[in-house]
Image (cartoon, rainbow, N blue to C red; front, side, top):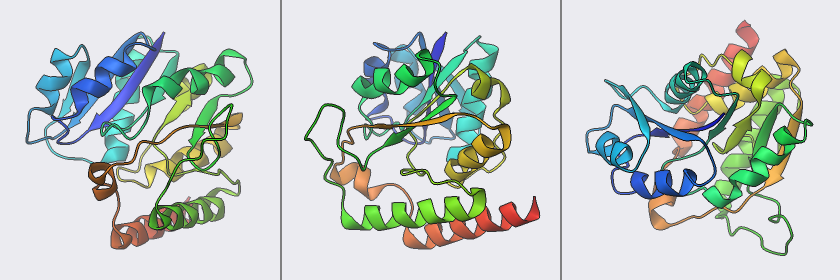
Length: 227
C-alpha cells in the first residue's frame, strides 16, 4: 500500500489541488495539518485526504514523522513525502516509486538540479536557492559522510524497510539531513531521481531564511557530534 504524506501549514488555498493530483498515483493521501490557523485541514479532507492535526505548529520534521507513523498504522509499505505548496509535480511520483518497485533502493531522493528524465528540460532554480541547497548538501555530508545531490528537497519515497525503521527526532527543516543520516545508520540503499520543480512567487516566498538556515546547520552539526 502506497500512502503520500503531506505536511501542511496554512495551505488552505492550495492543498485541495495537491491532494487531488496526488491521489491519481497512490492508494491514500495523509495530510498532517501542522497547527494551521486557516482551513487547511477542512480543505484537505474535502479533497479526499485523511487528516491528522497538530494542535500547535510543530515544524516540518515533526509533521513528517507524525505522517509516517500514521501511514504505518494504516498499513503502508511505501510512503511518498511531498510539499503542500504545489512546488512538487505529482506526475513525478511514478519516477520516485520505480527504484523501490525494482528492488534497488530503500529510499529515493528527488533531485531538482539534474535534467528531468528523458530530457533536455532543466529546472530554472534561483541562484539563492542553489546556494542554500549547496550549503545544505555540505552540512549533510559533514554530518553523515555521504553525498546526496539534493538533500534538502522534501520530495522523497520510502520503501518497506525504510518505512519500518525510520525514526525522525528533529522537528524543523533539519529533518532532511536527519533522513540522510538515518540512511547511513540503517544502511539503506539510496537512489536519486531527477524531477521537475514548479517555482512561483508564492513558493519562493516560503522556506528557510538565511538566519534560519544557519540555525538549522548548527543544530544538525551539534546533534551529529552528540550522537
